Length: 167
Image 1 (spheres, rainbow, N blue to C red):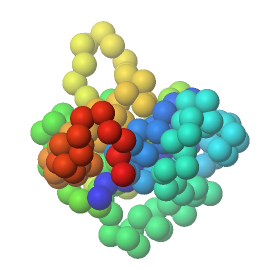
Image 2: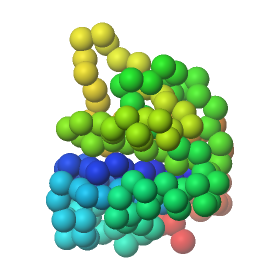
Image 3: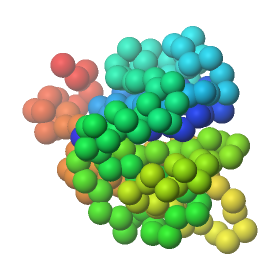
């Protein structure tokens, strides 16, 4: 399925929120360092809560290490960027895509843009600069999962009665 990649995130709470999103949707996360905070469970605990035990995440020392792994796995890099040309809902996602969000403060450098196989944007009102990185990631991941039929099964689909816990 798809994975989420965070390029040198600045804000631990956003990263924790994205880790929680990934846990709930069954997605993996890659964190490209250096980050603007210590990359550890402790940094994410407030926003990620107890969901952190249910997400597979990988740290990469730098973009070169991330790229080597991504290319070795044959994954496309799909960059979420305000400089993209194609609205995310018009992009055709594939299983295995790596959805990358840039730094909250600066996005990504030109070499990351150049490495991307796709550059997508979320259409917004002209006077607005950008969405919160966790919100943008949730929107794009949701569209990718919708296109790929990759959402987890619902209680009804699992044959469980309403209100029962997942088992």
